[in-house]
Length: 271
Image 1 (cartoon, rainbow, N blue to C red):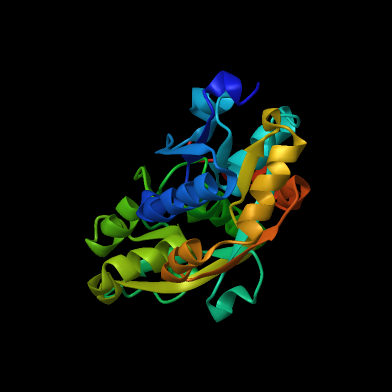
Image 2 (tube, rainbow, N blue to C red; image 1 turned 45 degrees about the vertical axis):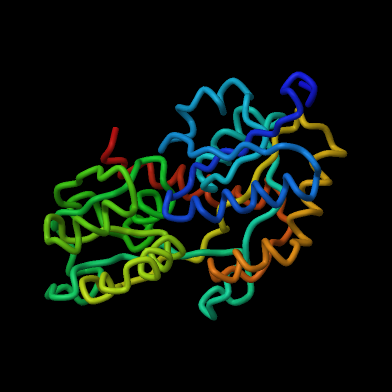
């Protein structure tokens, strides 16, 4: 599918938390400058595996969670290719393209350890989320807990909504992508007084930027090289997002997430 068929425009879709959409738009604007091609950046559906843009091979570039990416890659290995992933600035990331799933409770909660959460009400953003759902279930399995540990589960629809429900005492706990949590606390500093982290699960490979293979090897390489060598303007946005740099990744780097997903199906409460 050629660029001419797309009227010289690249579509960039973000399936990640919307509190960083300003940054994904900045990446799109940078790629437009670097490649001299119009780039249209849009927010995708919460579950990319249900988005026709993905299923029908209409998107060109995407920010996507590692779990839906690797699940899609397993059934359509010739459609999308992981090209880069971000390395965050904070010391906890150890200069690697990884993130954590932070288990949060209300700051005035009596819960101090993960074991205290047995039978308590929890929420998750989406069953297709690695950080908000998959890693939490894997945490139970890997420590020998059975399904009786889990209390009532509520699907919130987003990490931001999960944080709100915990802060307001509507649910007892939630698992949140550490980078999303950090950005939300930068956006709303007072929220830090309402939440506390009692455990961090991970690390896991950072959500990649993927490119559709219909773009062709030459253009995909140009996109990758551009992201590995940002200009001054994009670097300023990266600093604001507390991102250190992008590094090259391979699609196979996300197989570990697929393995965790397969094992966690034993406790799938959303199906």
